[in-house]
Amino acid sequence: MILPGLILRNPSVVTQGARSLYETRKVMAAHRERHPACALTGRTDGVHVHHIYPCAIAPERAADPTNLITLHARLHFWFAHAGNWKHYVLNVRELLEAALVQRTMSLPAR
Image 1 (cartoon, rainbow, N blue to C red):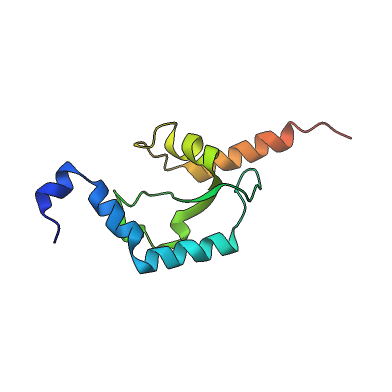
Image 2: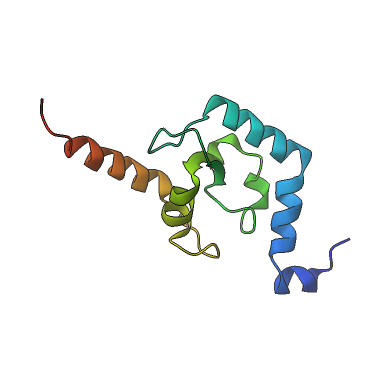
């Protein structure tokens, strides 16, 4: 049993519980099978499945497949957490779409 005071002092207790649930792990594995490549770079090595709404603030969305995105480890840190694992960026999809457009527009014409 988790004591309410412990959750207030340490929200990672909730995160660890939500992320370790069988249903969450199953949904994350299914997502990784369907989307094995980074959403921006297309790389398949060193990818993470990222929760857009973190389990610490929305544990009910931990097993929601629409709350997941595949990112390369470095992008996960910079795009989704703004360079600090304690932060989270809720508009990560929009940032990645803008980065894709920028990357597409910057390619030289052949």
